Amino acid sequence: MASNPDTSLKNRHRLVLGATGAGKSQLIRELIPAKGIRLLGWDTDEDHEGHHIENRADYARLVAKALRSKKPFRLLWAGANDLKTFEWWCELVFAALDGRYPTEILIEELADVSPSAGKASPKFGELIRRARKYNGGLTMASQRGTEISKTVYTQAAEFWIGRQEATDIPRMSRLAAVTEARLTAVAALHYIRKNGPDVSFYKLEFTKNGRKLTELSE
Image: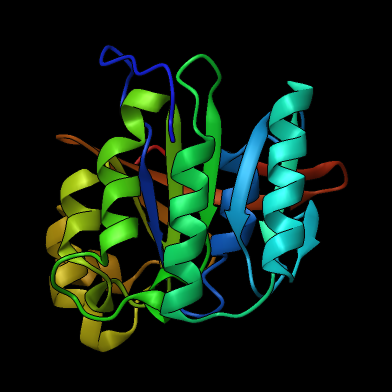
């Protein structure tokens, strides 16, 4: 069970939306530090660095061991990609949270384990609604923003909206608070960041030293 709640903690949940090739995983690598953190991830395509595990018992054992160590860790689920397994993973992640220590929670391709665009599945709903006060911050990614639960939109504090499929542009332009024409013009590796009433624009570039996320003057 999650421990040491702190209701003063800030909401760190974010949603990254973009069609195939938009650069979601690259952006997430910039948003989440590579080292020195506690990270539990749902990463069945193995897009991110860390220890990938495909067996439930092994994953649960390694999470428990990592928590006891009090050291940084990156433990990513890479096994079955179905709703039943996802609900198990969400329950385990919530139980691992401790308000004394910030934990990053990464969920790739959320639409794959979203049964509908309505209410979130039970354990995922509990995780996204209650993780904040136990120092958990969710970073969720999806190709199709129209296929994920409305609970995600009510609980996320920050949105990063990249290149969209044509059919998703009307709804996603409203989320980004920009015109449909402006969203249509978004290229790969470009993102609109929406945080409360604030809207800003970013470009992700590759340099000889890695990646660079630059705010544009738009």
